[in-house]
Length: 187
Image 1: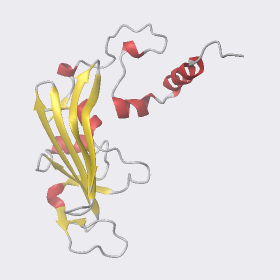
Image 2: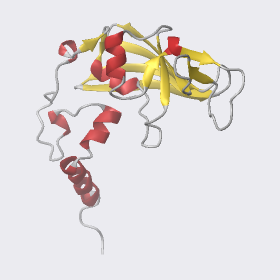
Image 3: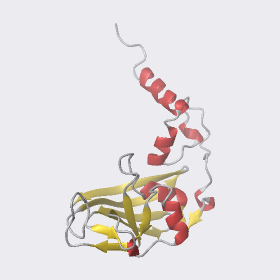
Image 4: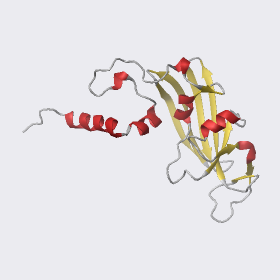
């Protein structure tokens, strides 16, 4: 007997996920939904969040864009320290505070010290000048080209051949920050 409604089950499961809380994970990966995303197709296309020109900005960067491009540590990485370089400098204090909502142990890159060897069980060649705690370096470069942002994010554990990252472009469309022309690399 043929299935009378192929895909109906999958659509129901997806609709169920939106109802029971998968939304937060999807928003973290894809940005907020719009009314046009309703599972029943009855959406209006109206954004459920502020328009991009009304979106909160910190140091000139829309908060939604920031959440889209930053690496999101998993549960096993949440306790790791990350030094942040923002366009080649320390992020301004307000921006660092916002980054800490995604990366709780973020510190400015100026506190980073490179050591010549990794002692014991350390997984990195970077440590904090003040307290000696080890961590990774996350280098973020953002530049606005009108409505499109050029992005480069590199995460590494030593000065050379020890990281990975991505470059691409990000734009806002229908209340979501969308990445395109993304290229990943591994060193």
